[in-house]
Length: 355
Image (cartoon, rainbow, N blue to C red):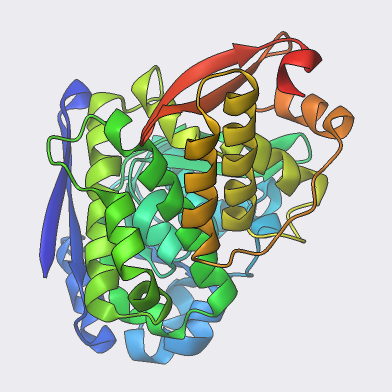
């Protein structure tokens, strides 16, 4: 078992992250330790409920089943979750538990942040992407027709409980979508202000075959490294006023692809990888890096055989990127590489500087 802690000084908020590979039958008991006898609603990913619902043992009346897919993270389902909680007569002393990937965690967290003006929330991530990124840090949101994650809140969980056994049944495509976020951390590590030197790029190069083979020990270490980087960033900047923006590396272009394809054609991680490629090319075109670093990035990404996404016309992508919550109508904000595992924020307001 690995125990990490998130300590946000700004609001004296502290919560644990527990990583283990105990029998999933024991997980309900572990979750309930953090509730202190409160009533609760469990927001379950549909796929996770089918695979593990009986093992976890939650009562049917306590479960809200959320269909899978990024397009399910919408206002309609958000309202349904709130109505479910109201019918259960949850009070301010009660809790919402999310068991699933980033979609379940994001929408359940947003519901918890707004129900009775905020009730306790526990994250139980079941995908690699949720384990290494979305379950930690308190970003909660839903998507709209205007763009991704434009309605949401910063709301930290009471606890994050990661059981790596869930990853054994993760299909290859969803596993690799998590690796998209992992690669992101590799290229921003030195900008994360982590006290430890973790050398994530070296870890990926040395262990990529074991990672792709779902090696349990290696995956546990991989999750730990990514979370140490995420924790460092969040503790320094909880609400994305400065440093935390580096976590958007690859996301500005990536989110635009997701929206243009209606969140159905490509996974989030696949789009992030394309966003990373776009950011490297943009950095090269603006003399922020040299070609050797671009080639190095390409070599790292090739090791994981991510799904290729054809390039989109800039005239279609740019208007969408301008609606991104990190930008404005006057400029597009990008996180770009400037050195080995180092990134900085830049603003562009002319089409020619992007092409």
